Structure formats: C-alpha cells, structure tokens
Length: 178
Image 1 (cartoon, rainbow, N blue to C red):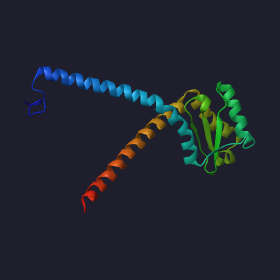
Image 2 (image 1 turned 90 degrees about the vertical axis):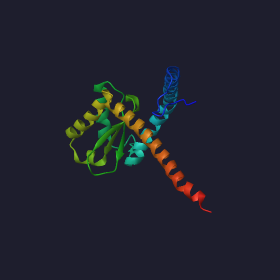
Image 3 (image 1 turned 180 degrees about the vertical axis):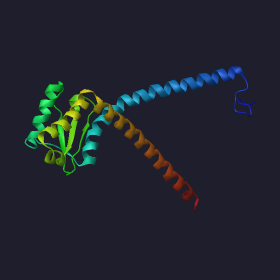
Image 4 (image 1 turned 45 degrees about the vertical axis):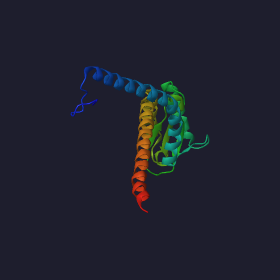
C-alpha cells in the first residue's frame, strides 16, 4: 500500500484531505510558537541592541558635564518637538557624524562623534541634531532599530545553524576514520 504515487501526490482524495489538514495544523502551530517566542525574545533583543551599538561604535554615554552645548541644544529641540530629552553618546572620532538608536522615544540615544561638536558651528550642530530629533518624533529611529534588532537576531541564528552544520559535516567523516 503506497501513500503517494510515483509523482509524489496522494492517490486518494481522502488522503489528500488529511495531508492538507496536516499542513494547515503544522502551519498554525508554527505561527503560534513563533509568535510566542517573539514575544519572549523581543524585549531581550531591544535591551541588547543599545549595548551592541555602543560597543561596536566605541561610544560612551556622555556625562552631564561633558559637551554642555550639545546637551543644551538637545534639551531645547526635545522640548520644542514635545518628546523626552534623549540621552546622547560620544564617539571619539574626528569625522563629523551622528546617528540615533532606540526602540521608543523614551529609550533613544543620539550618538555623535567628537568631530561633529568640534568642527561645526552652533547653527550647523543644531541642524544636525534637529534631524536626529525629528527622527525620534516620527518613530523613524524606532523602526530602524527594530529592523536591525530583528534582522541581526535572524542572521545570528542562521550563522549559528551554519556553524553547527559545518562542524557536523567536518566531524562526521572524521568519526569514520579508525
């Protein structure tokens, strides 16, 4: 008794119906389990994201007495944009640049290089920081941060699986060697 014909398709309509039900059940369970895992993992990914970005860029959260001009500008921009005052981090780099990271306005960090505050005038610095603050208010930083957190988590999983497969493919032939 063969469940499937030579073409790989069920021979019987009754069997086809049960195969379809099986596929739907597996799909439904995958969605439920994936959703539950996401609910558990997302807060952890959010917490790790901030530390990961600060670590990879070499940034440190600025002390209250560091860069008072930047702090003053950020406070004024946040007040006018009606958002919480973002924390800011400084990267010791002479190239002027800035970025934002955070999954919601209360948790956002604006990163600046020391070159940004050293080389730009106050008006230019305010323009650069107002761009970052506008990204906080429009939730653009949050969307970008969530996208990075989710894709980096998926990529890390794939790399882990590939490493396991590679290790297994190297170890399996070696296990056969006497």
